[in-house]
Image 1 (cartoon, rainbow, N blue to C red):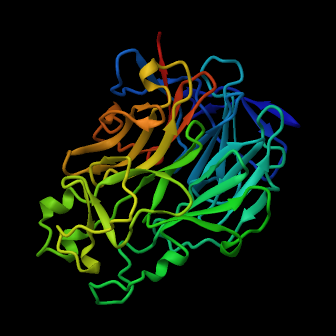
Image 2: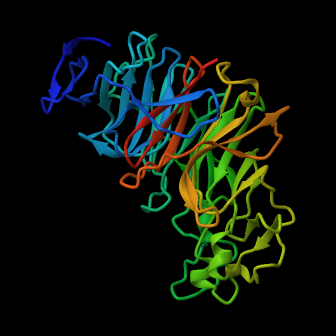
Length: 418
């Protein structure tokens, strides 16, 4: 960080605010931070602790953490005109000392790989060169590597991941729930015309500027919307969390009771390879029947099985939980059962379970899911006056994990006492 100076202030004459470093640039913004760390009050397995290390970052979506412990937070709503905030504890006492914002675009995706910070708006993907301290060198001069992706203001987050071979994977969610593109009709066209630009994952190069659809590869198709995705460095493959569709009872009450619609379709985890097909909008995965069922828009009656060549999920979860974050744990701080396993941040609530807004865990053995999923962190919404919604997940260099809440703007740190 160059040309930084120290600033100390007090908020409302009540909260003493810790020192904040300012960059000498009109392209960065700053927010005050308190000098206390708040106990998060989460329900966790024995031995785990959680604290709120930052708050007020409304719209905090995904996170990326440097080897030096700096935290980049991507916002879906601009704060003081900025869509990315950098947080840093400079002396290891758990308090954020550095906090500044840059990037004039909202969005969800953010990822660190090979000396670059990658960040997305709802249409484009940018990259920023990092210095040896993990800090962005030129926050006002990012390189645009992907542009012109579809944004119709629904399921438009361009979540991203980067592999070990300079490939960038970008979600392009569908703005249609089930490809009902003909007004007034409850039958969808075959093939679904939207799949040329949404409903899947596109692959681009990380080192090529100004790429568009014509320069990329449709890596996977048949997925309505993917907010949580991550590259698994052990399997050398991309894993995703698929948001299932809705409106079964609203549109087809003769086939789906309200109760059944509340339990369908499953939220699902997939391991992807080039050419993977999840079947949307033609079929969906029923986690009660454990089958792929033909969608009513394509003539299904709610029980007819279909999609014989469509990929099966590796894990399924209750409907409407809205998985927004995915993290594979590679640290050594947590007990052995968590190593190589998957943490998932659920941003919604299951009517069937009558709960939600939680972080779940899926154990992995030999690179495959090896047991039932379980609730890892709960009670984000225990206060009736607030409604935190877990969204982003990241792992710190010490092995703790961080959770972003995009409703209240909290950043949680979860650790373990040996």
